[in-house]
Length: 228
Ligand code: IMP
Image (cartoon, rainbow, N blue to C red; front, side, top):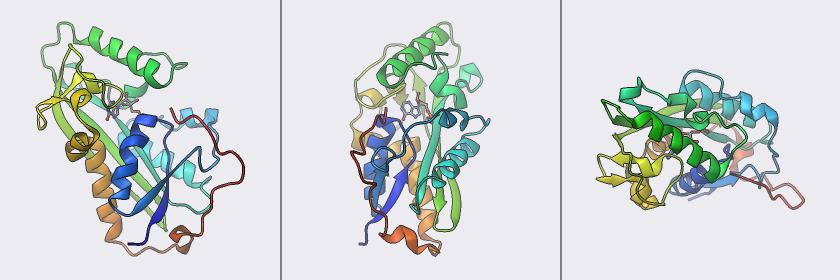
């Protein structure tokens, strides 16, 4: 199988950790933003300004396609939707805590504290994770979504995954995503479902760009960076 490279447009280490094997199983090598020499800018924070996961994912993919020097780009926008909170935090999942200065584990912790406050007295704890995965490259723009259903639980369990995972109990796995191995989460997750649907749709279309088939080389220099 020819391995093709794709730029994965995320600074979230947890997402990247899940996306790499999902892409590998379809024959793609994931190039992260740091390895591609694309430093974080303030403009990125403005990309998720839309009120749908699909529009946000496409905005991210289009933006990074402009910096990708011919690589196709995959971006995802995702979040938690709680029934008893009328779908919140939804597209605001990343910044629900209102702490824009935080990143990585500190941000996850602040968001989970916000979730716990919202859960007290909640009548309906049914919840879903939703993901939109967008592809821009090879002359195609595609978006597909995926969902996984379950409940939000106040007593967080497990240290796997990232974000709200200790508090999301998956109906299909019978455990929280915090307790699930990466392989188990990848069987049912919103992200896995969206990405697999996207790659299947892509495989059904003829590629129209030769630039993505292997000509790309990493930029010179250290190429180190955050990714959190
Ligand atoms: P964004 O897609 O970068 O806007 O961020 C999505 C946010 O939703 C993350 O920062 C997490 O808080 C949450 N989220 C999305 N997917 C997951 C997941 O698989 N596990 C845990 N939290 C998630």
